[in-house]
Image 1 (tube, one colour):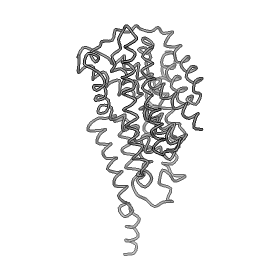
Image 2 (cartoon, rainbow, N blue to C red):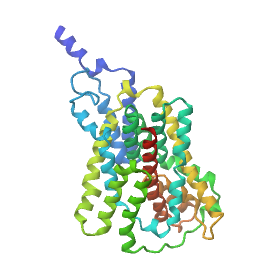
Image 3 (tube, rainbow, N blue to C red):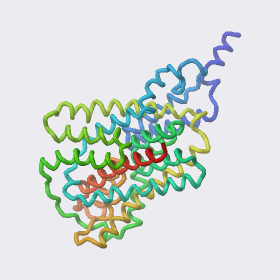
Length: 374
């Protein structure tokens, strides 16, 4: 009987408390949204299952938990805390990105820059709510709607907040179909949503090859701390555009980014142990994250409307919402919103131009914040 009682006291059923149960329910919700609703399944499914893994109660000191040295999960988590996984993800993103639409209409880059306003507004808000400067900078980057960038900056400035910030960033990326359309409709008239974009020109091969080189030098000279992200991003892109290393480009855009995404999602989810994750700060992070994402969306739309005051060729203001770097979710949502007004108005390629510039913009902002806070 003593052995039986000792065995039972070592089980997760005995060690579990309400915090573990809450997080397990959150993990199940993520899995449901990924499978049943297909909200960003490549992100939510690994994260949701990781939450389940991380919230199985166990005795401390057994080398099982993600925060215990020499555990398997701890070694896998090193890719998060070191910034390795985000850099690999950016390599794959670069190998999948086509800058043709951006080079065809360079002024759309301004919408990607305008959407970053959510980052700096949220930085001030977080400081006002009492977060430390490094914590505030890590929370603010959620406004860029870029999970890997959020994880990278948080790993450098506030590693104890990686769990809640990553979950907040990826949650809002997955909820783009719910968050962005009401903001777009609120800030635009039907006439503006019906604006048709002219057919863009086709950039030359030489332009597509020169852009990653020039982009790397301009961006990284401006914010050297963005080298780990933008260096791999532009490298992946020039591999794709060069046409001489197709095997490397395909590997970067498939096997490598998929592997990094699996381990990134699983370990980020596992880092949300109930006794570590459920704090007052986590609630504040989720609130500020929603504010950051909403302001970023609104900033892009409003800036597009301002640009229309000074340009002869009008821009559909919906494109401003794609200035956040949630690739390709926000571009797809802009396209679908435009189709609801006019089934023949195709905005996807134009939105992808804003989307890709948003990726670059959020990485630059992360580099600037990192350099200021260190």
